[in-house]
Length: 258
Image 1 (spheres, one colour):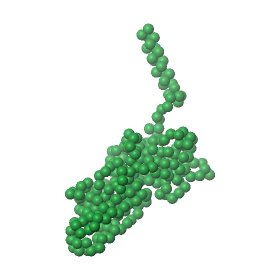
Image 2: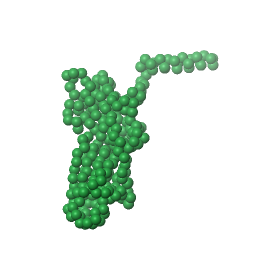
Image 3: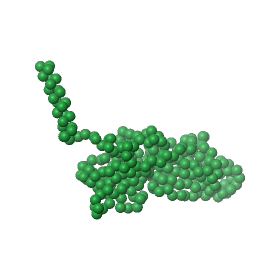
Image 4: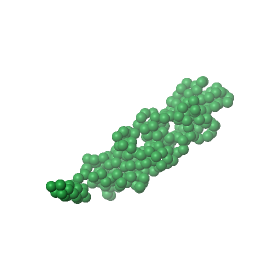
């Protein structure tokens, strides 16, 4: 009887393996194939889109350093099939918590309609969830950005005149960046800032002789410059706090003063 049970168990294992190979049991074979660390371009065929399968497609990425990733959707449909569209969204390493809002892409529009930017943290794993409508290729490009700021006002990094500071607002990270500007004499104070963001990056300007003011780097994959001028400030220390405007935002920014 014991030998009979063992033969039955072995037969069952063999049968399960055979069914798995034949595709009779569902298997997650996309994890290895959909990895941006292994290939920068991942293509989804039209017959594998959400309309046909009613399933999301997950794409993995582990950041090698602090920086940001640029995700670009490209049309891979047949000639005359029209532009591809759909939605992708950034998630944490467990595919549970969303780290961005849903980005609706359309490969037939302007670059801002099919390109999104996300701030990422060194050695952290992320997943991009794709809801494709039609064949599409997603490209992932990483840009390294060194951290040059402090997370507390008391330790704010002194920013020298005309020196460009660069920073990252990381997806899922609530830490703010603090900078200090020391003005030696009464003068005009000109701030210049730019960035690329998913959502909004908020800059708050404050100081002893300054009414607190807020400015923003708004969602966009192309870096655009902005200016903020404060008239005739008194000598003293002034501060700039850079942070995510909400929990779904992230991105890259630059800052300098003259």
